[in-house]
Image (tube, rainbow, N blue to C red; front, top):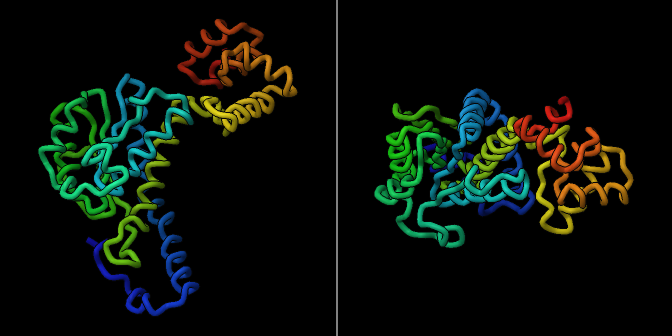
Length: 288
């Protein structure tokens, strides 16, 4: 595993100055985006499977251990407030359960039986993405095998060079050795987060959750997000703040619905109907 190897620039890292270590880390981090670009085909295919799964009423399920598991849960937890998706649409499973989010649960990633149990709720309509930097975490692989047995699409996100015949696809990000050998929360962790960002965000865009670069499905659950929703309405309708606020209220706090109401000259029910007809796509609803 290259992530376990000693980085050639780290032999004297403990004798380097702060600025020298900074430059070494910065130079290594610059390699991540290039590594992701080489995995473009696999990432795009994974997105297509994710879109199909959600459109069919299924879920995208991340399964990981340690840092990989935490990153999966983090990405999944950001979907409801950002894109107004139900929590089950993209969800994360981590070896060791919820307590592993803040504490190391020793041996959790090696528990194959726990991996099988973790896949208990998986159905054929779902897509499962196993996340393991080494590509060999027993918890993740057993969860993937059980998920495949249940008939769903299964992918692996790894920084290793792994081949498993039962999988539908592998996203392999070759980031090379870490500046601290084996510390995969560094480049490998960053690469993992970037890939998950791409998969979830592109999937949501493809599903009509973004319009002209705006987060039109944002849930205004706090002051900052309410201001964001109002700004989106103003910028997409040309309304000033006061009438935009009145429209937002009539739209029951939904920016996308408010925009359709204004642009199509319909009431709340009419806007909801147009959005339902267009599969939730604001662009398509405005074309109706």
